[in-house]
Image (cartoon, one colour):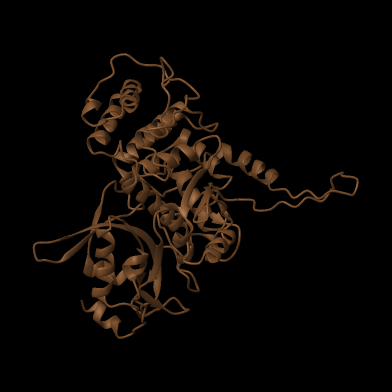
Length: 463
């Protein structure tokens, strides 16, 4: 299955590649607030305690929550919890509201989920992904044929524009919009969104679990606070950007904005299908909701999860995100620092590679400096033919770097479209010439400016 990103050039790239007894409350902040769960879970006998929480968890209430989660979990889930505890990922509070992974896992089980999603499956999927973020997948599952007719009819009915006469009676002329006649998605355009999902699970397990709890809740949304200057140096420009992208927000104080992030209205349909008819090598229900949310955020609320297309025609074939859209979405989801999208390849209007904007060593230093800040780097890579025309593009994530025995730099990467639940390695000399753009922390770049240089083509490909 192929995947794509769409850079800001024309034409756009082609496809390439309760918990029970006692109603123990959930601690929202271990030191202060707590709340009583909406529902209860029953204990099961014979729970296997792999790790004593006292060695890792200091808060007494969190110890009780951990013990109860272990008691209601299957043996496989217990091992996942145990591993998360030993690695510190379970007690991590690196989330927007400082809630821990443990607290958000409890919330997933103890609070109502949206109709059609099973809390036990959501809990199980969350544990699996947090233990191995490489399981995150961008490949769409098929909707059973016997469901497609009903889905199309419901979507058509919900899309009706019904004008009314002056006496409030409906006119007889109805206009149906955005009817997804083909919901079979062979080539996903969600590589950017899947990479963002991977980053959350890999670097911020507590935030990933918080997103799961919010997106699968009956509200189907996640609220986050971020400094407005993380969006733009100018407050007016930041507000205008949020308005242009249709992002729900309100000023929390003079420097902080609270945003509300939601998936598109059809994401729950896909999520329910994956919840009930999931097949190996396709997305989980969590992948559906996460990726639909990030696509909706980047596409200014024009994304349709039923057919993986956007409603407007600003991108070729209606799929994917542009480089600037990806950068905005990544900045909002990261919520801690501003990312800037750096374009490394110089590409003309005919999608032909004409040069590079930075030399090899400068690009290498950008990547290595970013990794030293403990951040993954989402990059857009291209494939070119013998005439240097771009024939495909894809988004992957750089997660680390190392040296081989000869001193050559090897980058460790994740690809959500490679049918492999683990990292891949790419020599720097092979990867860097392919990089069209990358999301780099703002302070890494400083005052460096792109300088298109056609002479760098020979130097790059002679490396």
